[in-house]
Every structure is written in structure tokens, then in C-alpha cells.
Image (tube, rainbow, N blue to C red; front, side, top):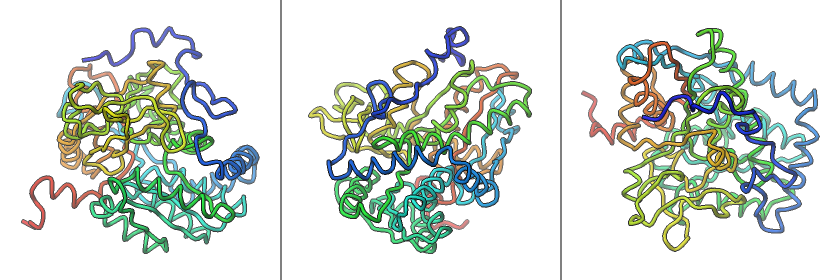
Length: 424
């Protein structure tokens, strides 16, 4: 069992623990940057210029923060998972309740901010990609609120396992375009969205759903999502009288994780990102970019250029993008946000993985002990808390980012548990 708090963490200077601000090219150390077709460079330049103009604009901030309060429902609370903690023994588990936002996940923080920016830029058409559907729902919600056209690309595999969110997007007025190429999941939805953007640059803004893609998207997403960590840092001190010993979040592209991690980077707090272990890294069927996998699988995380950025990407023995697997659609992605890749190199964040079975067990535990139905993505983070808590002291604290609610996953869970179609 690794130490909950790195022995060197309390003595390291902030410059060695905090991820630096990206440079002018959008590079987080060796990662990030802009790797897109030349035809997209002017559009990215426009986004950068608009972001630099409006991010500190008082009117823009007032409108955004006002909507976070009156529309999104912020601040979301931090809840003490008392029964789960008592059952496990050891550390006290607290949950940052992003599942209680309007739309049911953290994605609305970023989607609403980017939609407001797009409107400021004079764009009338919004495109987005989605895996679990929560970013698609959030983007469709923001567009309905602001009166903007919305097209969401979604792999048909994800559409089948996330049908409730497909219905929600359509009810909100969005056009959902099924993607049938490649693995028919999130990676391929991103590819189709980029193709659309290249064709419709003049009136279209691409709302990227996570802390990834070409600069300035990883930075913008981090800033919009940092509200999670800023709130949680203050709330946990009010509830427990001190900072937590560790903060845990699931990591797909990495938006909910970077959102809660960033305000804690200078604190003596262990940060733990939980990737999707799928059937186990030893099988080659997973989405754990940082996991040590046997060479025999031919699948491992390597540095490469992927969907507009340089980052760590799951690749096969031939250097091609590997097919991924996770029970959670939102974590089923071959790449990871560039800032996470740097934080791994700096050893500031510890990245682990939880397999499908671990996440499913955690999903059921939170339902039964706390009356909370979590997203399968968030269940990966809960699984890591369940694994660690029993070996810790009762006065230690684990803060878990519960990034979304699990209504969307009920069909998947019922099928996995063999309860599909059984009302008894």
C-alpha cells in the first residue's frame, strides 16, 4: 500500500509540485501544444484571443459566475460518507457532490463557460463530442439557454449504452450525430467533430469536453473546472477543520480531476487519479494510459501526438492508437490531458487504476450505504477510496470527487449484474 502522503511532499517547494502555467505555445513541459490542420490555426488563434480578452473581463465573469449560482446550482456541497466510512473502518470518506449540479455532472461548468465565450465571439453554431453523454447534455443545455444551434457527435456504441442521455440531448434541441467509424466510441466522435469544425470555421465553435485537445482548450477547461477544487478546499476545512490527507478523482480526459486537483497543488495533500482498468491492464483491454502492462499485451501508454496535442496515448506494438475498453463510456479514451501527463512526470499526482469489477462494486456500495447512485466514471474514484480507507487511521480524510450521478448508467449496471429486465 503506497503512503497516503508522499514523504517528501511537505518539504518540496511549490515550484516542484505545482504544474506550471503553459507557455505561449500551450505546452505543459513537453506536452500539449497545437497539432491541427493548418486550416484550423486561424480558428484556434481566434479562440486564444477571445479567451485572453474575456477571461478577466468583469462582465463576462459576472455573467458566468451568476449562472453558476442561479442556474447550475453552485456551490455543490461536500458530504461525509458516514456509513461507508464506518463499514470500511479507517479513514473518513468525504464526497464532493458534483452529481448535484444541474444536468447531473461537472461537465456543465466547462460547457456553459465555453458557450458564453462562443457567443461573445459571435458564433451561432456549437459542436461538441461526447462519450458518456454528460458533456453532450451539458452543451445542449447551455445552447438551449443561450439560443444557439447545437450538434453533438457520439459513437454509436456509446449511444447504445447511454440511451437516456441521447434522449435528453434531443429533448434539449440538439442534433445527435452517430459516429460509425473506428471503434465507434469517444475517440472517433472527437475525430468527426474536428472534421466538422474544419468545414464550418466561420460560424462554428467547438466546445471540447475535457482538459485536452489543442491549446487553449486544456487551460480553459482547467480554469472553468477549478471551481470544484476551490469550493471543496474551503468546504472540507469548514467541515473537518483541516485539509484532507488525499484527494481522489477518476481520470478519462481529465477535466473533473484537474478541476479538483489544481487548487490543492501547493498543499501537502496527496492527489490520486484513477484511470479505467477495464478487464485489467494484463489483458490489453483497458484505458489506463499510465499503468504498467505486460509487454505481451502489446498495449501501453507512450508519448505521441493525438487529436491536437502531444500527450501520453495508449498505443499498440505498431505505434497505432490502441482500442480501449471500460465499463464507463466517459473513461473509455486512449489519450489523457497534457497537464496530467506532466503532473505524472513531476510525481505530484499518483495515477492508479480500478478495473470494471472494482467500479461496479463501488457503485453498489455507495448506493447501499449512502443512498447515492454514482456515475460509473465516479465509481472508479470511489473504488480507490474503498481500497485505501481500511489501512488508514480514523482521523485521516479521503476527499473523493463524485463527478456525476448514475441515472445514465442504470442499463449498463443492470446488464452487468444480470438483472436486465428483472423487476423483482
